[in-house]
Image 1 (cartoon, rainbow, N blue to C red):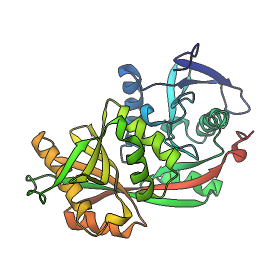
Image 2: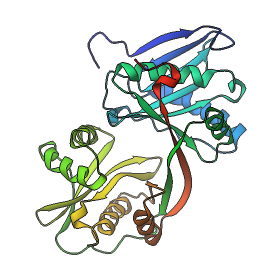
Image 3: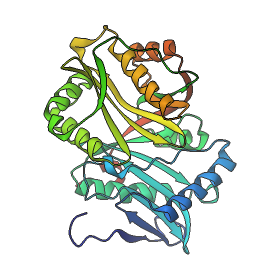
Image 4: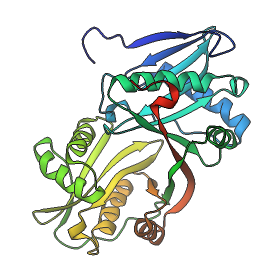
Length: 314
């Protein structure tokens, strides 16, 4: 945390933005137990109205801009009425996920939260973002429709029920935890695998290696690093992120071997569920996961927006 910066900060929005005065608290760090319980209560209220429960996945450790708040909570007379989470593992755009209590919807709460998040992200150098919407959310899709923000892409969450320990992979393949001294080599591998800027990838991988709740794995064939993925254990499941293989090493069984070794770790740890997200346009990855036994649980929509639209541009 930068010197002299409070763990929490507050701002007020006047009646022209909301029908009443609403206080928005900014949080820069991972939610503590009390704040997590607050977010959980809001998601349960949303589930009662929407028919499904949104996931809470605030991951402050992965944000590149540490000076930027990761979470915004709106309160009216001390009662939480909504929150907005900013995920920004790169420097080119932020991802915004929000939930507003049913009784406070269509009263400007989401817009106020978004404007505050955009203003702070603009100070950190961002100029655009993605609005994240659960495909099951009629309310969320209605907002996106009213705003007319363009669709960017969709992701499917895939779930695997782990019913047995996978068979052994071929000799010479190993899955090890990444070390910081390997960062340049891993950043080059990841950059090639996902087509991202090496500088941005380096920052992302460094955060992944340093994060206490996250394990960054590297797949090697003898002494050659060929693939990687990260794991977070949450709610009795392994969640996999950034599973990729170097383009020069594809079609050699490495992606399936990565899955085998990750599932093996889950089985040996007593974990019986593995989750991951895949872009809807990534037909090769979808075929791999479908063939492996993953099932599609839900989908998430991403819509692009420019900060200037919400008066956050500088």
